[in-house]
Image (cartoon, rainbow, N blue to C red; front, side):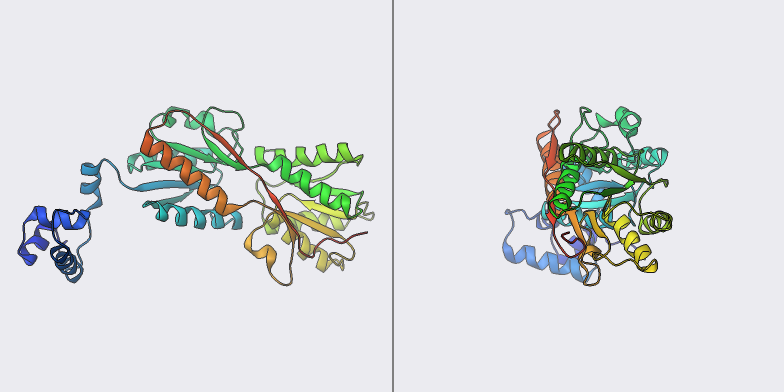
Amino acid sequence: MKNVTIKDVAKAAGVSYSTVSRALSGSREISHDTRERILQVCKEMNYTVNTVARSMVMKSTRLLGLILTSVNNPFMSELAYYIDQEAHMRGYNIILCNSSRDMDQERELFELMIGRQVDGILLCPAGPGSYERLRPYLSRIPTIFIGENLREVPESYVSVDNFRGAQIGVEYLYNLGHRDILYFGRRRNSTTHQLRAEGYAAACERLGLTPMYCNNTFSSTSIRYGYDLAKQLFSQQERRFSAIFAATDTNALGIMQAAEEMGLQIPQDLSLLGFDNIRDSGLPRIELTTIEQPKQLLANVALDTLVDKIQNELSGYSHRIISPALIERNSCRKI
C-alpha cells in the first residue's frame, strides 16, 4: 500500500501544501473550519505525520529514551508506567529499552538512542561502572540517571534516599519491640543495595542492636531468589531473629512463600518488612509493611529535570534525593 503524503491530503482537500502543514501544526493563520475540514480528510485517508521530516524542521523528535535494567522487575515496570504518563503530559513519547544489567548492552542502547535522535535519555544504571562507560556520550545528549548507583559523579540523577529508608525500617521494628532484626538480601554489586545495608547497620549501631545479614548470592533480586535464600535460611536449626528486613519487596514475597511452606506464620511467628512498595505488596493475602519508593514522584521529578535541560539547554547537573515513607500494613507485629 502506498503511504499517504501531505501532498495527497492537500489535493483531496483542495488546498495548498502549506495550508495542510499549518492545519497540522495548529497555526492560527487559517480558520477553524478549514483546519477541521483538513483534519477530517487526514482521518479519512489514514494520514500519519512524517515524524522524521517534522523533526528535521522542528529540530526536535519529541521522543525520550528510557533504559531500564530489568523491565520484568515489578518496581521497574511500575516506574516505567509513571514515566510514560508524565512524558505524555509534557508532549513527549517514550522509547523503552532493557539493558538486562549488562553494561555492554547498556552502552549499545545509549548509542541507539542517540542514533534515533531522541531529545533526551532517562537511565537506570546497570551498575556503578555505568558512568565511566557512558561518559564519552553524556556531553552529546541531555541525560538523567535514576537511582544512586553513581553517587557523587557530576551528572544529574534522581533517587530515593535509600540510606534513610533503611533507617526508618529498623526504627519501626525497634519500636515494635524487636531487638533481633535480620537484614535479608544484601547485595554488593549495587550501590543502591549497599546504601540500604549501610542505613540498616547505622541504625543498629545507634540503637544498640547487633547487625545480622543474609547475603544475596545472586546477581539480582527476584521473588524466586528470595524464596531460594529463605528456604536455606529457614532450614537452619536455630532462628535467632524475630523480624526480617528484606532489601526489596520481591525478596519479601519470596520469603512469604518459603515461610508458608516451612509452617511459619507472618506476623505471628516472624515479622517481615519490605522495601519499594510494589503493587503486589498491598494485595489482601499479602499486606506487606514496606518502605515506599514514591514512583510517581520519582517519575515527575526526573521528567521535570530532563525537560528543563532539553528546553533551556542547561549544562549543569543536579542531585535530587526524595524521601521514602513507611507504609504500614499487617506483616509486622508488636512484641
